[in-house]
Image (cartoon, rainbow, N blue to C red; front, top):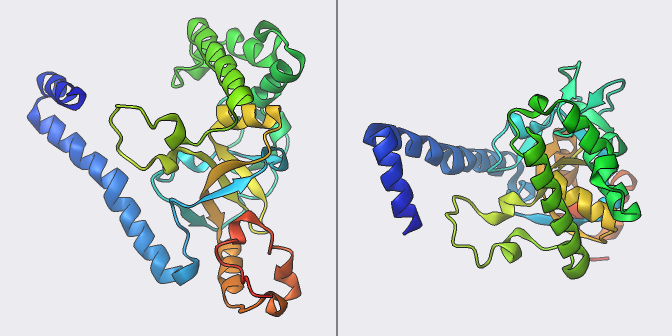
Length: 280
């Protein structure tokens, strides 16, 4: 019923031609392009191919880096990617805003997660019960809400207050009931779903040597980190090409004793569990 009402409103406001065009774009974005990407991965990587719906489990406090100029803006979020380059190397002397965008640089690279205002302020709230008005997050947004014009959560003081109330509710719920997957949270939702809920879990990237780098899902991740949650499910959004090659190499070994010394240290890595040998 909700879908029918939305379609009627859409038809009335935009006309049938625009609705058909928008629907076609949505289908290409969510289904066709990811399907092509998955076929390419299968041809290139065989059994070691990245699975866009696979979840791995990580400890939030083990993640020490975030990606500046994150991939979310450039790559389809409805699949997973393999990307070469220097994006998994440190950047220096840049300032991060609450949205993880960088100022004064067009480079892409990693920075310490303690530079992220949002995580700093949530940690202060959780551990010290610091009033939001005394946090760096509040000061940063209140000083110039217009800098977040495209991000409704933070583009006005009113929206900031609503967002902080939502974060408090998230802290309380996670502290009481633990971390919940998206399908557990939305199992009774009647809203329209275009894609698998696993695609909406916290997203991470993996660098050439297995470094786990935070990508998106910042509110859930920062709260889980501040609360000391032991494990959370995440999806791998981007793998470095060199790391993907290590996954392929790992798949060639029939037993743990056959794994060469260079790769043995990765046997316990969460992203190697689907390709590592299980026989001693």
